[in-house]
Length: 128
Image (cartoon, rainbow, N blue to C red):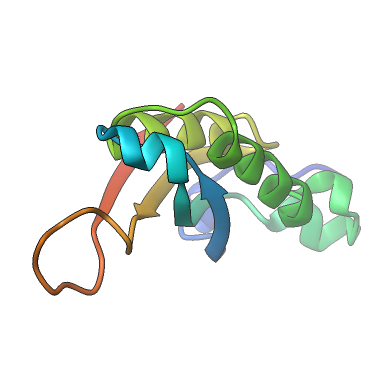
């Protein structure tokens, strides 16, 4: 049984937060050479009604598979900017079954900043 995407389900979300992976992204040569951990948060707007009705993972975003695909991006081809990395991650999210919108935050807590700080992050929102 497939439910239509309707106004009743516009608030449905699947979130994957705190996904850590080691990558070699950054503007500076030492970042590209030594690498560092990045953390990804992905919040997907998706109608969960079909999966709720069928109780079948095939009718929703399989968050285990999504996590693996996001890690592949982070550990893959280096980029200079978090903005570029976030864009690539958002494309992966939007390719998921029934995903209407993706909010992706990329955290770089070890960014080369000569001051005490907790985190640097970029958040983007993309829709189909």
